[in-house]
Length: 337
Image (cartoon, rainbow, N blue to C red; front, side, top):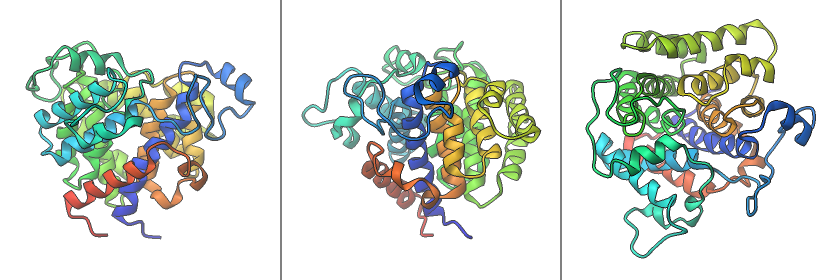
């Protein structure tokens, strides 16, 4: 069955929100505790986090920043445009709700002001650099948080791969914009690889072939060794046997960029469908909301929005806005099918 580009773009943004919402209740919990709290199978669907005021389907900074990435792309897509949009996101983490005459249409949405364990490097990189700092060549140590390769680069980078601009340009744009908060080369390169992978998936290329092309592109950049190794590990472990939480933890825990990307790839390769891949991506001892978000972006692009669990989509926070932002991105790229 042919999956339209429209369905893949909707699927990627909606799938990311689903994975984010699935993983948020168990972020920071070891696997043993997840199983104690949720049963032997761990998380099996959306349920409220055990924090005051949280509901089933709540999203975190992963989906928030993804939407602000879309905003920056619609504004022009330069690193300066993305810096401005991410500074808009930073306001949501310090204000209780929308103020008068918001600087961005996204800032009018009260649900985006929730603060749910945002990444430290994302916060400090934007707060400490209110003025735009131009990025350096991709693969070199960037000027902001040069030590940090946290998964905050990858979890917000799906929209770069949804523009249809080709894997090379998607890679470069995502890697450059990763430097706005994370200067470590691996943080940049993992974000670039994720964007390139999605660009290839949206052309209809099967995941194994798209992944091989992404690794080939990645290997041309300096300091790509950590990301290539993590992706190779994901492919190897996926081929060894049935999917399991223990296998996910052999791939990594997802706190750092290359492991977050590799876990998403492992789950998409090892699981037979979008629902099982999403569940696999959050049932582990690591950064469950980010690995869930990145896996959701990936399997949503692979299978399309129509393949995502309808019962989860019915309750995920911000669904209408996510669909509108996906439509705006499609209109921006001129996609009609």
